[in-house]
Length: 294
Image (cartoon, rainbow, N blue to C red; front, side, top):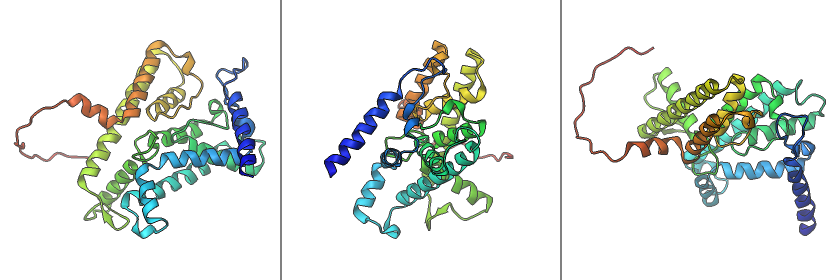
């Protein structure tokens, strides 16, 4: 029975990937022909599970292997990763379904629309596969996809992006300041100041690189801003999704995308620290002076 399942499923995947990169002269980019399996729950579910497994990180899997299903005993890191991952998958799928119901999902049965929405929400954060034509997405769907690509997976995983923990730390930090709370608390634990500083650096560094890449590519060639940003976010998050303009950009823009992919793969914080070098700083602190913010 197991052998039969492997043979049937393996043939489906091989057949699907053989069609993935066939070039169609009527389209402006290579179409992912796994769209013919957009209603196949077996293929889509297995791929989604593999993406999620690789995206939540080895630290989480180690915690799960030791503590099993005892939620209260999980580390704070594991709780944040699992809850954020679930929220992003469901939230992204709901938004994609709403925004694309009358566009790329039009004419599909309800079950297929739900499956395509779930698959897009999962794959946009790390894998880059698609069962719908990304070049035909609405502006709103592209924006949602860019946010998912920007966040990416979790620390210690195979995914890119700024990571789920970074986003949660910054949200908790902003909320704590708005509420004038005594500390940044989540799941009955207080966040360390060092984690907040690192999260801020990662967020700002990634945004700076994305804005720089977008402006640079717009200077090189006058493509649609939404399409250029989609390519830049995809490169920075090492996702691999495309709005269909990558093969038409000039060499300078391609080198910029390569640079962003390199920074996204090794981590923006690692890249920034590599430029710092080893400098000895004197143990002296400058005097404090207040400034007006906001």
